[in-house]
Amino acid sequence: MNTMNVQRMQTRKLGSQTFVCPHGSVTRKVVGAKARAVSRQAQVIRAQAVSTPVEAKSGSTPAAAAAPATADYVGDISKTVLGIILGGGAGTRLYPLTKKRAKPAVPLGANYRLIDIPVSNCLNSNVTKIYCLTQFNSASLNRHLSQAYNSSVGGYNTRGFVEVLAASQSNANKSWFQGTADAVRQYMWLFEEAVREGVEDFLILSGDHLYRMDYRDFVRKHRECGAAITIAALPCAEKEASAFGLMKIDDSGRVVDFAEKPKGEALGRMKVDTTILGVDPETASQKPFIASMGIYVMSAVALRELLLNRMPGANDFGNEVIPGAKEAGFKVQAYAFKGYWEDIGTVEAFYNANLALADPEKAQFSFYDKDAPIYTMSRFLPPSKVLDAEVSMSIIGDGCVVKAGSKIHNSIIGIRSLVGSDCIIDSVMMMGADYYETLEECEYVPGCLPMGVGDGSIVRKVIIDKNARIGPKCQIINKDGVKEANREEQGFVIKDGIVVVIKDSNIPAGTII
Image 1 (cartoon, one colour):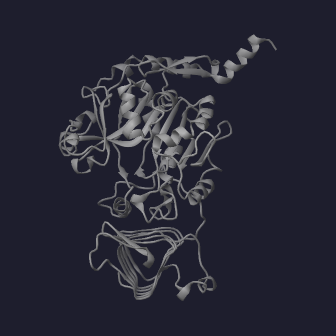
Image 2: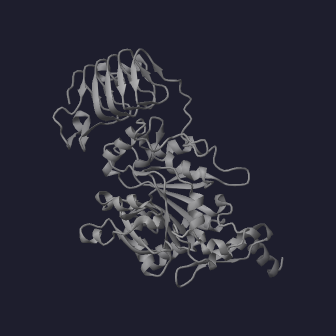
Image 3: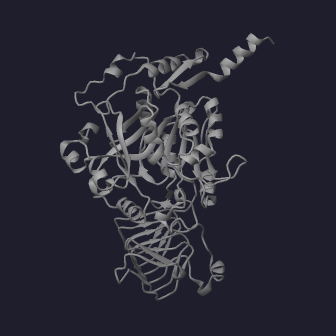
């Protein structure tokens, strides 16, 4: 076979080549076959595109109007976008819920886990190549992902997967992940394999947010603008603004200033008119800051250039990479998200977001949407059984038993939960159990406390982690109004005034907390 034929075969295999211009814009030179004709046209348009306003007040979108009707900025997203979910570090803000599991594996909404949110959003958006990066307690997360998704991701012509990438030592790097950017950098060698297979952009997500989002619109905006980095953004109030990365944008949506968790005078300087995001003037006056949601689309080539060449020592996206990219002339764009979004990375936020799911007046998120459902593991559990009990404004997961005389109000009751007779369960997030237990098995437990809540117990404003055993006649009500306390040796912790009963712990009969 001569040299010319070899080159032709290599060209057909690679499909396209990409590079970053000195000013940070992404340009593609197409060398593929006929099958990539539509994608080729879209890529050329993208390289020449003028930034489109986030929410043009006049309603005009000159860049979109100039584009031909056949332009397709998204194309086959299953082949051109790689999802990267950042599992977070030790999860200290969610401790003790993260004592024996990675943060994305924390149970949510009776039947689900936190990781189900970004994975489901990806699958509903046709992003079928998904990695989850973590380095702490990843066993249960790995088990959940492998049992819930691997058999159903992708299709006959597309290779799909959902996999955990735990921090590991190599000859090149013997350290743990030092931050979000460092985690991506350490696995860049693996992500580059996906790039060689046609991936053009990385969709970088967090594992502790509650929201529903069609990432196709996000990717489309990113490519229309020819951006190196696009940040999902929403307006926020001053009392919560210092917990987020804040930005200022121009009329085209390009980020002109970025500050990570500013305070004091620095926070005041980030105040803007958020009507530019498309919100009404009243909302803009209440929420005068533009917050980063910690969700990004990044050009694969631009990100490689930033992490490996321009900023090889940068560890964090919010603190270092994004401000550094903007200063280096890379185009950083904002994408206005208008739906419900909640950061549930703290015990208080996690508790409130869960209970809001059961309150019709507060609920802004539903696990069921016929067009974009939230998926999880198929457990094949029996229907829940509620005997002569009162249940109001609550969600009860699969396989539960609620015995006679009990009253459950404003609570989330997780899978396989057992609530004894004459109990009062009020404003409780009960995560349930990992397995059913027979009477014979229970005898091996000191005092033979069954998993769940014992007869006659009162539980109020509590998170009960999985497999916890609460004896009969207990009162877990935080009677002294304690805000913070560490009683791990007794099986519980109090954070933000919320009692958290630790996973696998025993609370003896008659205990009063």
